[in-house]
Image (cartoon, rainbow, N blue to C red; front, side, top):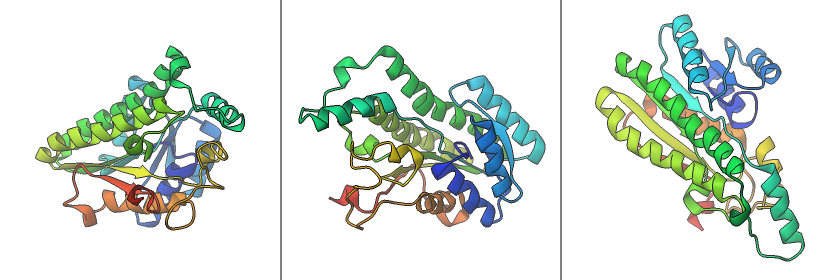
Length: 250
């Protein structure tokens, strides 16, 4: 379980543990990760930088050596861009059009891709190398509704998540042949530390509008992730499931 120190990742680790799974919590913030491991019964923590393929491979090797197998992987680690969000907030407050793409730096673009998209590939690849030999397993990558709808102001974030969705659909067509299922989740506005940084910018956690009338909870994404990891979803392959309170239905 990557990104397990907070938000969707932490909630998913808890739900999986409650359902009887032995959980490995993975993340970059070691103190927060250790706290999360204490809160999730029977789990243990491994520090990993998903942008680094060697770091990911080492973490999966340690987890496999300790447990002997890996049945499911949920990848929730990801970043946003607070600097660009502040710029959008300033433009909106001044009554200006949102205008950020032309001024994104190579560093902003590359960092977003290296964590959100490259990181998803590193985690998926490491999982498949193990699960292919097992002949079974489930991988769930957390994308975003922005990867489906697009998002003015954070095009680099939306592009990284759209790439995650394409990765899910493409890799799933291969992995199904050796018994491994790959699926994704596209959350809407969920009450996490990341979305709280968007309040007043993109309709964040205090102002989001969805047909259901509220923002989502991390546990509501976790429940879908747990379903996709379980045998209850044994015929679900290559899907991106929108969990957004009906926003995509509008």
